[in-house]
Image (cartoon, rainbow, N blue to C red; front, side, top):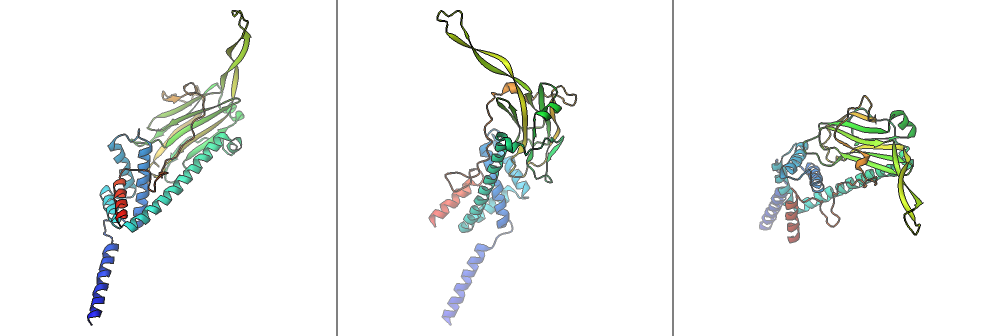
Length: 335
């Protein structure tokens, strides 16, 4: 009888302990919701780490994290409470962290492939042939438009039809850009001439008109040799003469957003225009980038956010989740 009572008591204690371990308070997020929030917080932290200029103050960093909480209909307090609760259950937390890390890796791979494909289009004639010459007059990064932007390509015939003068512009108005906008929305042109390619790029950071300026014809520095009559040795001297004109053969354009958080979907581009600078439909803006301001060197290959550290098994960022992850690691080491 006594043995039966002891067995019953032991079983009851084990049940109570298991129940207290697994029972989740109402203020703690469920596992799936917590994993989704952890993912977005880590991505937001990566944005902060990779774009110091946009997030140079604590207020700007906090604003981005608060946008993530707003997206998930939660708060900093509930995030802290949930993270603390899960971190006290180290096995469960580590499984959740592994799941989030695997998703971050998949996301990073997807964006790397996307950027590689866009870079290939800029470099490969065969890939460019797949692009349309259609340029929208308006474009919205909205929830109903899952695309990350648009791209286009004009050949020499289409350039002649659209651009009547030597100087031309690609411009648009950006509307509803958030006050704190990371470097994730860019506009680019690749201008391919017979002997060179010029790249123009601008980053959309605020509500204004953006303009990229180009030329249909550019002078090419030609080196020729002629005798130097003032030299007693009659040595040949190299001189430079700009007499050869290089003609624009194609234009490849991109407007692309890298919004892994999905919180920058209210931005609109209006009055999108590509044509002659003196066209009556174009209103010139003082904010522009022209060929004269570039060095004619290929632009650097676009880079995606670094979501995963190469030398660590934790997400790349260190901010809101770092202290808890450190605490979890210390707990794991003692068990």
